[in-house]
Length: 128
Image (cartoon, rainbow, N blue to C red):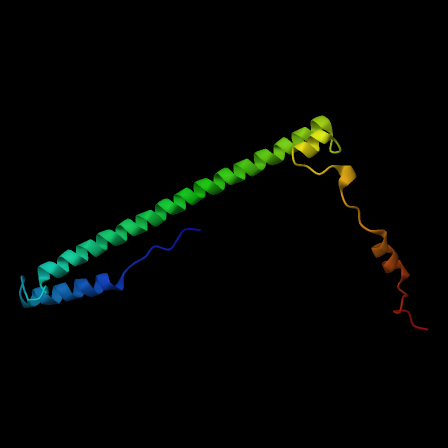
């Protein structure tokens, strides 16, 4: 799932403020660092930083897709290798266990007490 790209309300506010100040005078300077030129510079810097951030998100998404694809390929190969060992040596062999499989003779069988309890319950659904 792609990461959500970020936008900025401040970019829109800056753009409107710059347009308003330019409608008064194209190079309006209110002093103390409040001028059309300064606001335009900050607007460009914010826009560039946001574009860079969103590109990093896209690059991260691409890298995650690569990792997931390799994981799926590795999982499938590991499964096929275990199946190949089972075909060659059998599922109850030492080699199968060495490769990460569980030998058939070592699998836990269902307990007989559960079956015995189920059959020992009286049938109460029949009417007398």
